[in-house]
Length: 145
Image 1: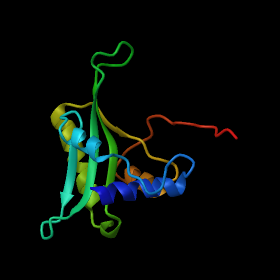
Image 2: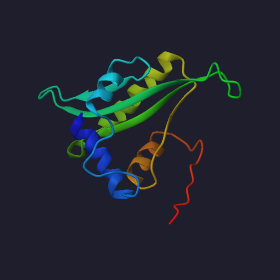
Image 3: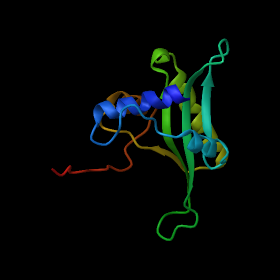
Image 4: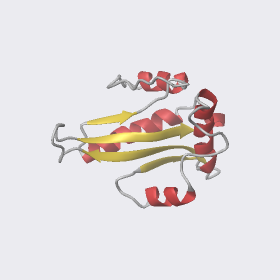
C-alpha cells in the first residue's frame, strides 16, 4: 500500500509541485489504520494470487446527504484514491477495481459514484472517461504570485 500511495503522490507532485510534496504519501500509517477500521471508508484491493503482492487499490468514502438541508437525500460513494502499480498497468486491474466499486455502491443503494481528477493527470482522466464517467462540476483556481 505504501508503494502505491507514493506512486500516486509522485504523479501529482510532478504535475503540481506547488501543491504536492514529493517523497511523501497521501496517508500516514495511523490514518491508514483508521480508514481500514471505518465502514464509511471502504477500501478495495487487487492482490496477485501467486505472490500476495498488492497490485492496486481503491479508497472510497460513503457520503450520506440524506440529512442535508439543500441537497437531494442521496448517498454517494466517493472514490478518494485509486491506483494500480505502474509496473502492472494495462492489464485490466483498474477496470476490475472500478467495477468492484460500482458494485459496492449499488449494494449500498447509492445514487452515484464520484471522484476528483487532477488536470495534471490526463491518463487518469482518459481512464475515467472510458469507464463512462462524466463531468459533474469543475473546480477552478487562480494561483497568486
